[in-house]
Image (cartoon, rainbow, N blue to C red; front, side, top):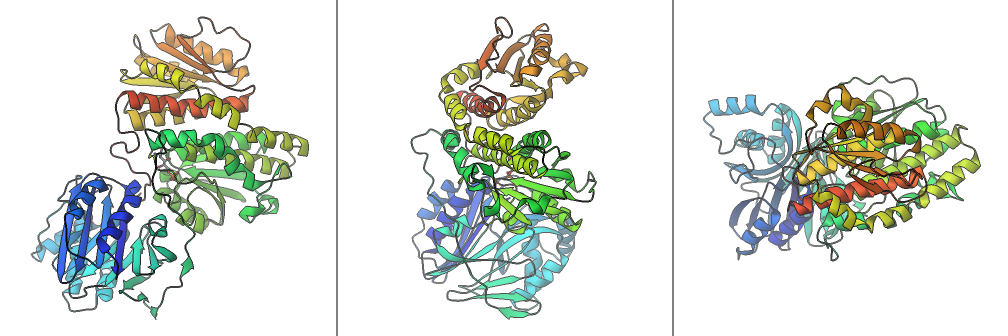
Length: 606
Ligand code: M6R
């Protein structure tokens, strides 16, 4: 993970580095650091924790700096401490790094043998020392970088400063993203385009075989074939200054955006009441021979993919498998002829999902990204891309990102179903209309935050909780348990309702909360029986279900009747309820909701 920013020009480097890091903080917040240069002065400042700590320290520096590199860290090698914070300096080289150097131990041993001592436990400092060892051979910085890259294994984006090259920055990448930006007052480097959006109208995404060399007034690209200037493109990314708009947390603000986002996500892909993805540059013809689908993603995006599997198999009858992206290449997947591989990702930069996309392409499969963040690696490099239009998501726990992925997958399932003649035009039209109307149950559920807060108060002192459901309710249980775990630190496990009694039920003790989801009337009795099995063993039972004109008396200790009239309404009502329940638990426990411990918004390392 980690976020990188770099600047050289006539402007205030200190401010640009600090502002850029603030935008990049979602990539990790274990520590932050900056190297600032100008007017013959050099400062390296490092702080633990959030970027605001670094900003406070930077504010105490009075000098003007014209060149800087900054870093916000998600620790991989070495504890989150000042010692391990970036930038790392070894003799004449100072760098910041995003990625993982897999062979750092061997290189470290070799360099230690040559008398080099290391200050940190990081793989990044080893890369810095390796570049410096070549730089010492009196070669140009680009040559030193190139020689080091030939020895490194792993993934990296480096922003580097070399002694004797004041006012100049160097950058290179392999696997991790890095963009150059051209602003009115200089040149920039950043891990993502949003960090460049307030400074630069033009950007260039560095290719893996290139080394960038930035001066105050020019930018050069070196490749083994020669030197060129970047092929600048217009920067469409935008960054809205973080603003909670009166909400206590970004997560709550983002949940409250969800009713409005239903239309945002769906309307670009609906024409005359039917799914139409021509704005994503494809028609049904592209998929007419598809006989199998793989959905590949991580975390909540993988849980949204499970919903996608349910929708695709229900409406298009195409066999669909869901894979955790970090396992995809190793499972190994069976590619039948005409397998479509769909990569689902809010950030578009999740390393394992990117690696899966590359793997699928190398196996000859057609790839389709379902992505929120524009101009990201997955959006650019998938064969086709559907944007989910959720807008910037700042809370680490995804809410609107997950919802919009599920909505788009629903519509895509109708699109395939219609194309494959598994749905009539009328059925597809009705279902398209239906999905557009789920903003109402979503909004009505948000209004019931108070009820969910009372339920949360029954959960906060429990060390562990079980969520159970059948079919799509199990898939929703998976997301419910992840959401609760990641922000409230309460251990939660999701189980297929019928599976609990095959072992795990032995964990149920007096008062253990068991939460059942039952959005499908046909499965209601079975799920309730499973819930009762836990009640007989002392569980505190909570049921989220629909208004099925069944008596709910005595069926569970607590019941939350979901909004809406049919299964689809209830599924989306439940999406909101599970998010608010997790939010309320975390809030009541006083957790840092938007920035949970040990996490980062975008997981850019494998
Ligand atoms: O950006 P992506 O959708 O690829 O991210 C995938 C997961 O890292 C993400 O959904 C994660 O599980 C969230 N923190 C869950 O809230």
